[in-house]
Image (cartoon, rainbow, N blue to C red; front, side, top):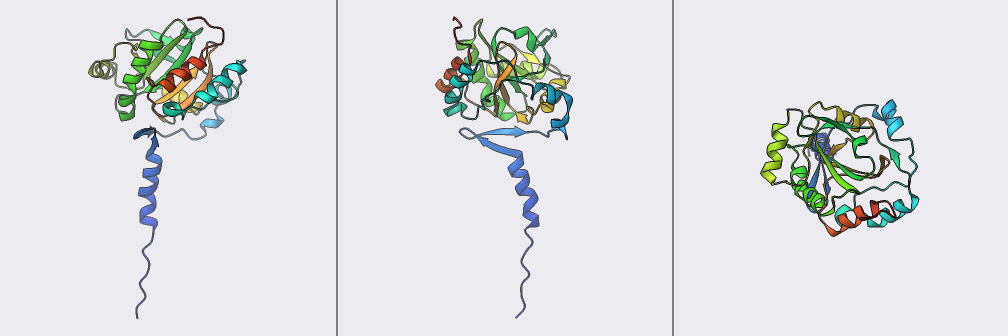
Length: 230
């Protein structure tokens, strides 16, 4: 009797790896678009300065936020130590250069997205609604497109979804995305970071969420400085 040689499993390894690395399930049926991270990004000076150096934060605020990372925002990572963020630069709709420093004094939900990112398309209306309902002198959603082919696509994207409350911010240079990668925060799209009024990262979410959900609003409320007035 002739023995049959078992088929090598190697032909399945690559497709399986692509499937696992290419998409990660987040929330109810959404996917997170993964991108390549630069080699040795963790060894870069930017990473060491921006992601490792602690900020003077509000311990009570972080304690409030942790339990609020549930439901639609369960993927939000709340570190016990706030981290310095680099002064990311991008443009407004008129082409004027802005940076995170321009939003100092506010709690910011910073969101990085692209027109070709399907999960971003699903998420953006909820960010628009969050800005409409929670935007104030204390809080703002700052969503930045990382498309590198000009402003027309992001502008048309906003129009196609009927987004009226979010300001259009873009970075056609691609520098913002590479800087985010250098601090370990550009693994995929969409990516959201909660930044306190001092400019410190106090929460990080890799992947989409329903930002109009009660859980998201409760998380944002908890992220506001204690004692702040509406």
